[in-house]
Image 1 (tube, rainbow, N blue to C red):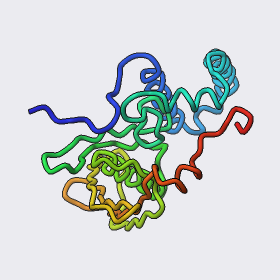
Image 2: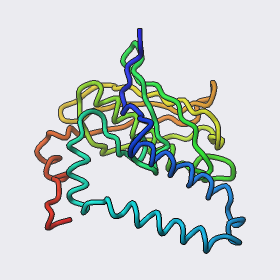
Image 3: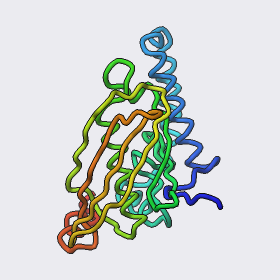
Image 4: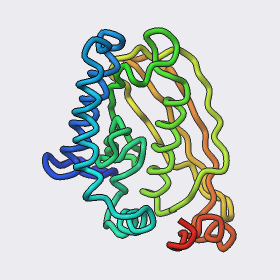
Length: 215
């Protein structure tokens, strides 16, 4: 039986391909570091030309936000798992037979915090994202109001990280989930999240979409 993908299906063309190429660019810049200094002026000029070419296709901010949220299916623009977001690793999460989620990701040098290891904020972002997707798969669209993250071991840059997440239950308008990040058999990060249903009136008001005048 084929596993079910809980996050957006990556594509090999269009904006997904552009985002993927941009990730390769960021990785190359990060790895090259000051070695780029001798050629920096020419590289900046080339990037400015490319940026202008891309920017010519970009609508204003309010219109872009609206089109993002009109897309069917899982979000493609999230900074943790969005296939259209060049800042995203990105992360794919699959549904396990028990309803929990599992995924794998390898983080490159741009995500470094301590020497040779993943930044703790990046680990927290991955957990927040995975826990939110677990809730969504359980039928609860909710936003984070609390995230308790514990760091047990540093995650080496370039290692294969296993992401596990599960929906734990609902208590009124609050939804709870938990998960962990592993490298091999080693549990490196654990997290418990508290979320509030997005269809709650007070939550809807906080996340009311901005009008063009507000953007």
